Amino acid sequence: MDNSMTLAILGGFIVAFLIISYLSKRNDRGTSAPSTEDFVIGGRNTGTLVLMLSMGATYFSTWTLLGSFGAYFREGVWFIGFAVWTIFHGIFVWVFGTRIWLAGKRFGFATPGQMIERYYNSKRLRIAVAVVGIVALVPVMLIQVVGGAKALESLTNGAIPYVVGVTVTSAMVGIIVLWTGFKGTAWTDSFMGIFFASILVFTALYVVSLAGGLEMFANIASVKPELLVNAGKPWKMLELWLGLGFGAWVLPHMWQKFYSAASPEVLGKVAMATPFWNSWMMAIIPLIVGTAAVIPGIVPTLNAGNSDTILPQLYSAHLPAMGAFVVAGILAAAISTINSQLLSSASLVTEDILVRLRNRPFTDQDIARTTRLAVATLTVIVFVLAMLPGGSGFLVPVASLGFGLGLQLVPSALGVLYLRKITETGAFYGLLAGTSTMAVLATLNLDIPIGPTLPGLAINIIVTLIISCCSRKVSEQSIEDFHGMFDAYLSDKGDAKQIPVLAQSPR
Image (cartoon, rainbow, N blue to C red; front, side, top):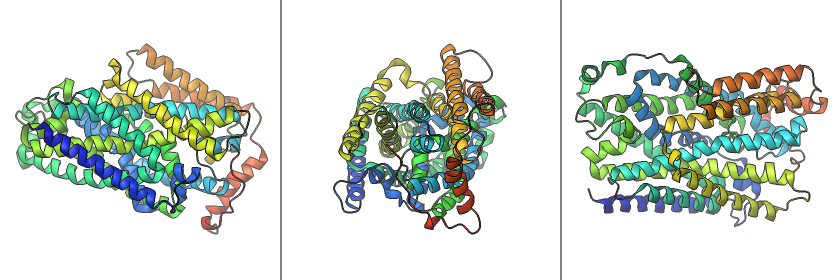
């Protein structure tokens, strides 16, 4: 095939990203030096459409566009149960996101750790939450780089090697985040969400026609009937539900998207649209394409080992010109997704770790310079991990590790948002015990029916509750500042638009 076409289309996408980033920067309050709030959370004025598309594009990444297709091909229809998380996530956007927005608006929070420290009055818990959040995001960022590079290598039959794809993705991510901040990432996310919604609908219709139309599933059953039988695997499914549904909302980049909303009403609309927007994109279309790929002739070069690249192989075999467009878009989707995760991680490094460890206060210039240095450093780390032998494993298992770590942040977050009886000591040692359990189980790689996520979460909850029963309670002032505010402004008489903006969270 003509690799020059792939390069031309990839170049076009890069130019499109730069133009969108430029437009978002020009629209950023007309200033060449945006504040930390503008750079990290978009000035708290993100509207419904952009926020919905940005949240969706965070998931419509290489996990969806490559990993889920391969999972259906390897394991069959049981995997569709994971899409239940999209309903849960929509609920959690409203149930948790609204409270996060309220506290962020009142106290000027820009990171999760700032809220955690203000409520628990705990420097150590703020740092611990930040460290776990960053470590949780690294595997999720890693699959974006790996997936895009794999797709490009597959489409060009190795003419554009894996290392080039990793390098291009890493470089573009660093440039866009350093240049535009939150608004640039949100706008590019929105662009990619609309683009891939169109591409995936076309892909599904095209594959159905190749697979026999209404006879598609009968043809699948004649080749590999076990794919259409629910294999069960309840523990794996529970791990996916919890990690993606209950763990995703508390990951730092999603938490900061809640801060960025213009109002609670925006989050309510996003919550209602999320299940419809996410479920068909992440379940129905990958199911159709992934299972149909077992029919001879659909994807001639496909096997279990390269099944994470079904899309590029499909287009390479049947529509090479379109395939160049799709794979270049996959690489661009990886860039758009990792943007927000990288920006969030860098802000945590600066605001929640370095600021709290430094003896003298940070100036705005210090924070800007340090955040940009953190972006560059994290970009290099992800690049190096992607080049290691273990960095290019199956995308779904790698991502599940990150979402599982995100679950460990839930108990401490619930203490701030709902559970008044959780104490600082309980939250800190619960988080330490849960993450330690996950680390040990993941390292040992034991052959057990459940992965490291569920045992880690169980230990976290047990330790948190037990220690909270016999340790010093959270101050009455914190209870009133947070839970009192939630009760007042989420009642029928409350008006979130009238929230007084109090002193900013101390750095």
